[in-house]
Image 1 (cartoon, rainbow, N blue to C red):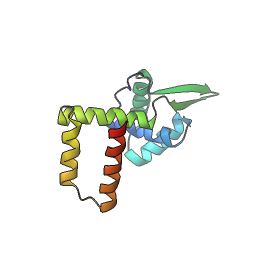
Image 2: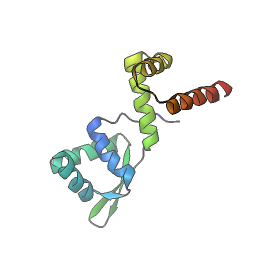
Image 3: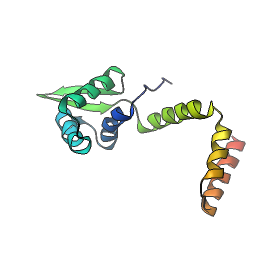
Image 4: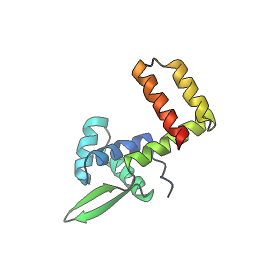
Length: 125
């Protein structure tokens, strides 16, 4: 399995659009993000170029348009972000992360039962 490229928070805004709908033209991406983020066309084009260089997206030329497709799935992105957070904040100690989360957050009975089931399944595998 290849390692997912590091996608910045700003770049993830483009990826979110592509995960929702693909392909999107550069103009569609620019139109949506100038409304949402108040970014300039050039800023968005810079992010598209960065994502392409990182091999997070690909494009096809279609007439006068460029159509963009994600090469990194949303699931791959989440796994990489989770791993990065775990390593950065908890020095890779997943047990400590889970314990802290469970201690600090309000959990319903259903949440607790679901967590117990996940742990039981993990123990079996």
